[in-house]
Length: 306
Image (cartoon, rainbow, N blue to C red; front, top):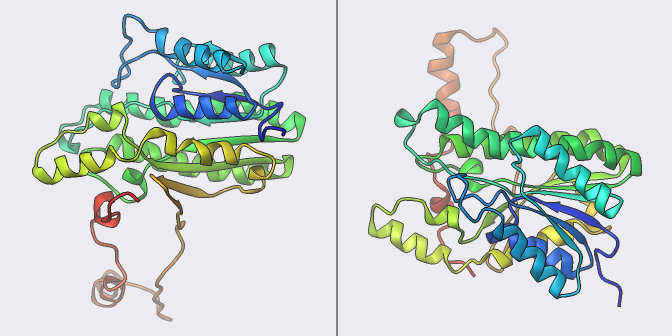
């Protein structure tokens, strides 16, 4: 029986551990040849002494299972490194069919204490990193008339969370990037979608626990393993999956979601035009009943992972 990704070549960033690792392993088991990118850093994006170990461990696991893979140790935040990742896929395996933008870091801190450096590094890895790899893969996708982008977003951006202004902004920026790629490249047979994962990882493990409620939430998060995310990503990378584009998905243990996208939900009109006074007296009260509360992700996903 043929495998779903037979003949495909995928670049998976941040694939040394966690979600990226499981994606690389599953895609390889479905026949894809994989560039396993991992900087070998800790959850803060800082290089560790055995920096090449995680990516090589994944490569060895793929090869031992009969698959094909090569390691890459570059940073998605570095444009030269990002270009080299894509070139490595083409030089080694002859093409590139899928880019999974999974690499990420956290610098969680309440906004009024956040430094510009903490803002910049998170934006650079998540948002600029997703742009960088996509930018260098896009010409190859266009030329061959096919390609798949899968970007990782978060409910921290889609809904909200405390102390994550940098991360939330980056993840919402990725939504805009993905939709633009879907619109611009649809005519070339290229798809672009986002996935918001619920999974226990090193990054989730760095979120401060300040209350019993936080501790309970973390314990529930541990039930959603990274392996639960991989099937959706692999499915989107198939020929059938490529027909779906411009969407935002979520995975939470055995649940899968299709998220809504921003559309007008309420309007008010006046033939005379608006003044500050009429806005305050008429428009804002009219909108109040339809306005969203200051929800966090945990306020919306209130049930245990299924």
